[in-house]
Image (cartoon, rainbow, N blue to C red; front, side):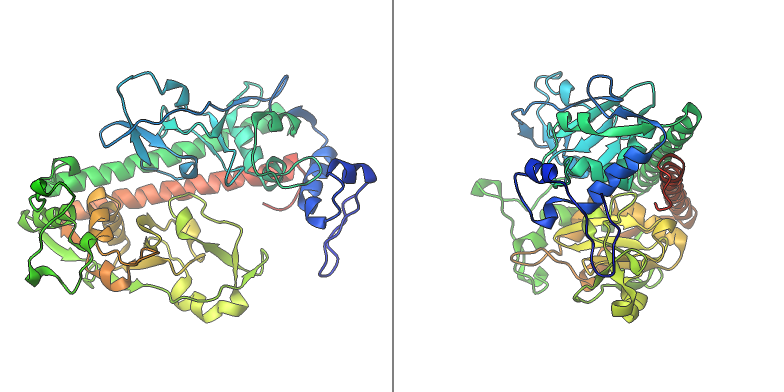
Length: 476
């Protein structure tokens, strides 16, 4: 029997058999209350239940064996890690040798396949759209092919729901699972409602992923127009004149008048210098992020001790790690009572702000869609408040290119944790194309941002329908 929360305590009753199944342990954390509640919700559903995988299950679930990774420099076969599963437009983590063209075919994922992280952060789920169709992913990822009975969209919704996620990450008696094998999915029961309801939910998810793909195409178009206009060559084709090849080690020479009071070698990265030289020599004018005509304000929140609260008592709090995802919420909510003034002045995210990670992983860039409005993010993310939404779209198109990332990362400092600050970001160069083209590029990015918001809204609607009409619940 699962009991509700009473005052400051959460409690439940367990049977002797469950204690024995848990290895005789009596510590409360073993008997996860949410997991027990999730199983009771599924049990109480009026619909028939079918195993998630296995014989007679709704999916074929498997992972690939370990393999030797022959890493090479670009060009090669793009290789992605499970940690990139929910990135909207991931960049390859590494590149693999293409010496044997078909060697990595078993690791390729295919459209509408459901992907599930099975170690580390377990239970993260995504579905393959056009963006990642055919991409090579690590072996350490469960692949799921949905049956025709329900389709991939419905299974994805079940796994994305709070109930489905809880069932994924806990055992039958509630203990938290550190690693998932395909066999674990055989035990999970999925409620299957009417065909009409299944199709309605599944179609929403499929449309949501189509919007994500469309947004990526629009951003790629915007970046292509910009790079073509300023006539930058491929990064790999940029000639680096500062290297002294006879030294036998990676090195470069810097004149004392160009030190800028910096003595760290990375600041004088020849690639960043070459990109800046190409921008200066181009036929277009250049400015920087510190130009008030482009950016009204560069906001770097101060460090602070965070007070987290339960849902409904605060605002969602995002970290830099999740900045490239559609729904970056991690379940953390920042206290309005404890951080009210700081939230108002520094931490609140506004639509079409350009956001740049400035601690740890440097230079990850996002433009805030409308569904992030009013949420908050950490002091490890710098916000650029653009002079207009179109300018914000244009700045994102530039800053999300590999060229701009080199210009951002060159400012990195720190012996243990990499950092950049607002002054550094203000010094990043921005090429300025003709105003009509600038507006066209900015509008393409804004259209992509709207597509991402629509994708989020559709997914949330599908989750709401699943929770209410399938599970009989009233929460998201």
